Length: 478
Ligand SMILES: [Zn+2]
Image (cartoon, rainbow, N blue to C red; front, side):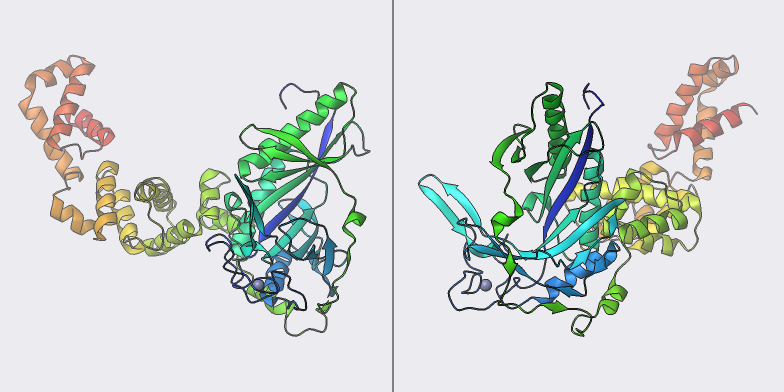
């Protein structure tokens, strides 16, 4: 915390919104794709709040939130309802937002060690853009289903907040309920932050406009620092909402915080309350059965089954389900769980293969390397039939043509790495360079380097230098 006094302890609570990836909007049949459509194309009288129209609950959105709740061990409320949250802003056509006040869909739960207060469902607002000669409003996003998750104020560092946000993104993606791309605004983080010397909580400041994972950490760390400095200088922290300016890496005051009653919450009279104890349209037990393997379950399984330890490689596989799936298919093609082969497989997938894919900007669903061929390559490397250098060339060829590795090796003459071939080159080098051999035997180490170069040249770089040196020394000591 950059030289600041550690007397002040931060307390952080997060409010995270996620746009749900349902086909239609929350209360009407309009298409839900606010990021790809031309302005004001996905709109209708309901999401534009024309008089006399009635909203209808999108059950898929309700199911999505319940799935998230079940995944994190939250309690699904038996009775839940929607409420009107009133405020006036040009991006809110009704003058109120349909949200949930005192009966959220989910209460409690835990994620990444952080206790959850609640998860509720609401509708998103439109978007304003400010042009030179006025402001423009696009209502494509108005009425898009939005999930809001609120944690308890139990997070004590910016790093932990970041870890939580990342884990939530994984859960949303694993459940296929949201793409949760922060840069696109599909997942938005707000942080309530206070610092205090004792158990009594300090004045709470809300920080908004956090649009990337980097900003989650930076904005929170910066706010902790700002408040600590104020208190150390015996100044007061004002309860307010601040916006994070990513460019300036600084927050700025937006407004003094409203109290809940400013929103004049009231039950939404146009929507029926939801009763999950009686409802058979949404069956909680069925939804429980539909839950996929969750990120933390996969982490544990990968550690147990393949010997992974915590770290970047494992996290990349947990994040990239395409890569993890390919890895598991390769392991299954290898036919045994030899730890060496598994290690080789993950190394070649995670560095070489992903490297080529990034270079060509290819995805996991449209590439030519089959798990079977990849497993064959790993077996060749493992039995020293090809060196790592040859393997890289072969892999690139596999990637481009989809051919199998033995075929590529046979056709391109990329052999020469087998022990027999290395031995042949070693014998040749010894035979043709008697002076160097003599020098080496007199104790001149540099002569060995010279011989090594001769052998490698003969093998056209396909030899494994360590193996070549080993064989050279062996033959020279005869
Ligand atoms: Zn609509």
